[in-house]
Image 1 (cartoon, each protein chain N blue to C red):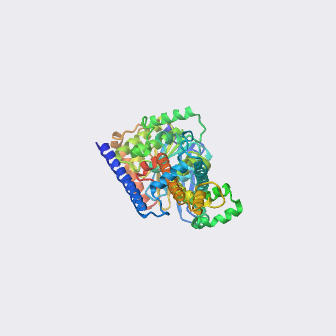
Image 2 (cartoon, each protein chain N blue to C red; image 1 turned 90 degrees about the horizontal axis):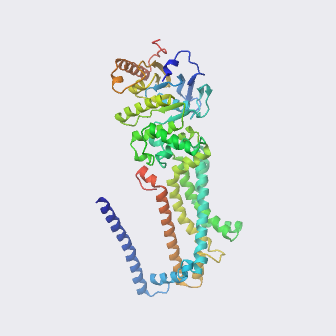
Image 3 (spheres, one colour; image 1 turned 45 degrees about the horizontal axis):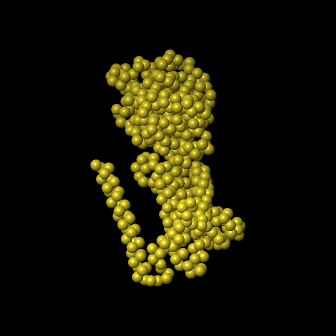
Length: 272
Length: 279
């Protein structure tokens, strides 16, 4: 009975949520049809254009077009590579620096300084040092992604229950293994929160990094469309970026929910 | 349990399982001593309780004895060897199971955690985990998370984890302080059963007087500010203890009262008693 009521409630919540999305889309459609402004195409036109550009390929290519391969794939690959790299560095540095209370005075000021730096400000430097290539783009994305992960890892590692570490020491677990067996899983919920923030940053920096000197990617496509007054293409790129961000976040949340289910059970609270 | 037979004044640091010699600990140089010149020994196979009023440095003492913390001065030897760091022979059951069990690991993985540093074969690990869980009566709960279990069961997991490690010395730091009275009695009897079955040396820290007398061969009473050994008493009770008959035994009642008196004196910080005044 209670299960039925629960599923009933979940279904109603879903209907309400979807209903709102549908209503907003309908409103958008009505407004743009009424306005007849060339800078504001209708969502239906945008959807059709997205299909033409990226999703009208042959079945053998999973329905994606050549455009998808040149515009979307490199962008997603860059964003994910930079995110993964930045995440790994942030986790590794955070775990080690967070382990020693005495390091706090040395670690926190520079971390807070660089974290507050607007990341686009670093683009010229990266361009000069690394050149206008994928290495620079991935480095830029990684650079942006490090900080939320590092900060969260640092704070979470500092907050790891000392008795857990004592337990590791008491059972003769070496320090390097304690990082993997104790600090990392104990800090994982906060690390995941940092990674989620960084995932959004990765997309922003991906677009930014593709505004300079590249032939591929959604950022480049967006800028090219704007420069050639292809307004519909521009909107299609924006919608595609929104869709990508949404789907990546959804995938991440699903993974997080699976891996960190213990945290919800242990604390009785949702993930941070 | 033949430990009592080995218990005599001739016990030396070499034959003792655990010898704590003149341990002093200060937090920060020049700071007040939290633990001051504590000396006592635990013979092989003996079960000794360390009991004292709150603030007598029990936790600090426990950490230095286990090797988790270096004392400011003094030595701890396990089976004649001075320790630096936690010796292989020693396992600890911490006070707060909710802080010492890994919430992301299921019961089986928690118990097997202690074995990961030993380089054992997988089959050996499985056997030990199964045996230890059986010894604490948790067979069938392998796939649960600790936080799905009651407090008493969680502390059983912590005990199983220590048992799987096959220690020769088991340090129990106020292990039953946060469970209800009924569960506490069950866990006390489990401790006695484990001691009988595995024959290891147990040092049991508690602030519960009944518990200290009920469990031990000997009670070491600490006094506070700074933590020092106030007195030691050999518990004169039959080896086999029972929650009802032992606690009704006039000898238990008398010794419980004596230890209670010692602790009250210790808390008041009155004159020191000489060691073994009964001898």
